[in-house]
Image (cartoon, rainbow over all chains, first blue to last red):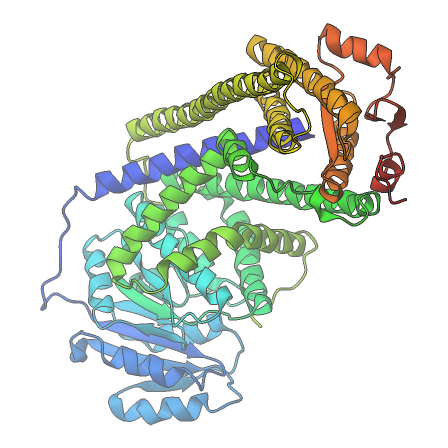
Length: 414
Length: 217
């Protein structure tokens, strides 16, 4: 079993090295290309759809942020769709009607239902979907719009960031989102973005007119929509110059509920659009999605092994404690050779060196992202939190999601 | 559905080449560090051997006073570190690596020389040191050997007058074979306390302490 796990670990590392090289090469090739831009007059009309369910605490700030965007006001339409909120969401939204915000109510429960109502009411050529706990920088919308100069682009994603990260759970997510900035850009260079964040994304309305609105029964209607766009041969681009901040769960349970829904939805939607996998869909079908699936499978295998192996070792060590007279000095030798021994044990282990290498690469991704968004606060400490805890959390979330998928359990929003 | 193509086949080839080079480079780097470690152990063994032989010559040839206990702690910890390092190098380079095998054999000689010196000390000085000869195996039952090592480390932490000598029972060495024959070692892990009492696994810290010279049990 030890030989199998060692082989799996080295295989994961080897695949990771090839994938990392591929993403960086793709980004470097892309950065040499020139782009077209809309002039001020050419900017298309835009509708911003904000579905809201019990968001009384944040919807005002969301509307404030969108009203401040740097975009011609005569080409901007803002629509709030109240989805049976039981708090004061509707009341707060209605206060913004005097600023031109349109407020509708959708009685059928579900974000997909609310968005579809918004699409039916929207007049803009480009539709932004925005969560009611998300805040956009003034320049973000215009920067995202510029990617629609390519007629084949049907959706554009922003630079997603965490709004005011407080405790360790939010700080871990902050680093995860930062890491995603480079990778999403690298995927965009390959026309291989397959997830458009539900918190804030832009779509060409023409796509909804031709291919229908959101799947109202899907718990991750945003993933379904993005895979549908890719399935029909269109592109999804990314603007790394469009910072958008969203509120994230601040408890372990909150994170688990969210991730379970995301990953469950990912599994269901990838199965639905499994025909994307293959050479007919270019780099997305040939490399990005297969590597993603393989990486997840390998991570889960390794995580499961490490958890069980360490539990067994812990059990053995607990049994051994009585033989040691409950003296923990049997487990660690603190003497003059401790640090030398530890250093050499680590550097002669290739797996440790590979981990160091990947940490360096992630550090580069994060540095690149930080330079883009200009925020240097709490970088080093959050980096250690992320490296220490994220891999374990990631494996755990996926295991839970797979169990839910296999046993066809229902996954709800909240 | 609109046609899509791979952007660049050459990029896949380059990614494969770069990924493979990085993979092999990092593996090579770990071997480089292992080689550096091997060199450092060689130097450490040379220095330990010199230190030990110098003390023996001081005592046997120049009639210096042998009763100077501080020689033992640092040399003992150095020998323990060498043993641990040689184990790690063996798992890195393989048990048939000639360089590691020679170092392990030399290490066995050092241990026995040290034991002989301690016996001379015990016959003339006090407090006396207790010796524990520890026979382990990484091939037959590594987990039991690992656990037995932890018991010995715990015993040592409670009583610094214990000196532990660890022998790889699978080492192709006439000295180790002679030791096994002398103490009739058939099952490992096993310990011989003060060259007198044999315990085979499982044993606890209490079991060991019963047979020490300064036993509180």
